[in-house]
Length: 422
Ligand code: ADP
Image (cartoon, rainbow, N blue to C red; front, side):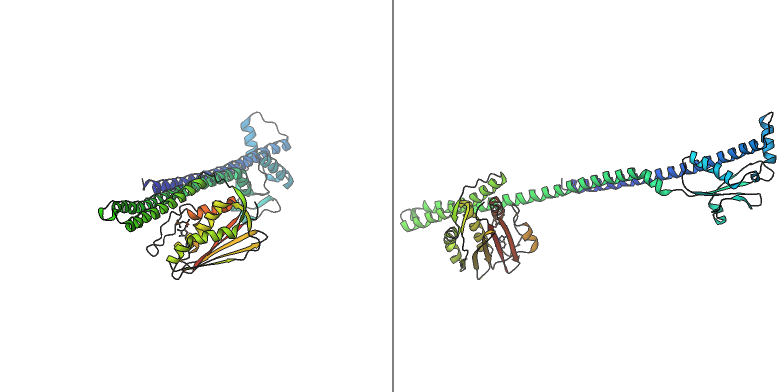
């Protein structure tokens, strides 16, 4: 299955190259055919010209012949171009060329048996004689004269006539290539998504299994004879179960949040909120976690206007997720800062940390669902890659904006701007 995909790509690429090759050879053939048609038309025009000249000659002589042979005999022995003026010849050539749909300018010359010109148009260049079409005016004459016609094939007309064909094949080939590249890209994306999803499932299993195992151990301990009469121990193990339960709840909550934005059913229950008050509340809830890591959280809530129209639960989740990440991806000593400012656009909330930071590639992708930066074994933080995609979806639903600035190894700043009212 893994090898089929590259095989298909190779086969389609080969087919597209093959089609291109066939089209080019078709176009080439068509150009060749057009060229041959041109040669045939000029030949025909020349042949007709000689016939016309012979006919005109007979008319001038006003002769009557009993049969065709005697007529031909007369022509063979008496015809010469000297009976005609340059203009007579030019007119006949002109008519014959036009009759054969040839419109390009031309030059001509009629040479005697010694190769000297008897009649020629003004622009005829002797140097071009070898590149000219030529025919004997009377092949069986004693001193046959040769008509030279210098005419250039108009390649641009050929190209113009073929233009629509070339344009259509370029158009269709481009459509095929475009459709092909879109398909390949979609396939790649699907492949990446399925990898990311299986990563997510592994992650989730691990995340849920750990608290389950701890709970199971705690319950075993609780039923132990030595523990069952010791209230301190019972309290300790029950606390542990409660803590793990809370952790599991948090994980399930995150997955549910993601499912909600997947189904696009984010229902905002909007109300006027004091953003500062909510930020303080979330920060309070995280105090323990921050203290555990010996970190500091500095709140610079400077916004003059801090009442916004938002959904209380979702807004708190935004702040929680950003602070939770700042703690998760921190380095020692941990310093986190939350700053607020108000301007015409609304309330701006900056969550700044001095943690592990991220490179540009990671920054471009963190708002994608399931995306997690591969930090190797350097920083083994657990997560589902859902937090920020949820934050972005909620900020968008409030018509707000979110951006990230970060330097790998130095820290990150997430800036959320929420309009005062939607
Ligand atoms: P999770 O934290 O569960 O992996 P998130 O959607 O919250 O999922 O974050 C996506 C990724 O963005 C994280 O895996 C991490 O690589 C990166 N990230 C998020 N916040 C920070 C931060 N404050 N510092 C460094 N990296 C971060």
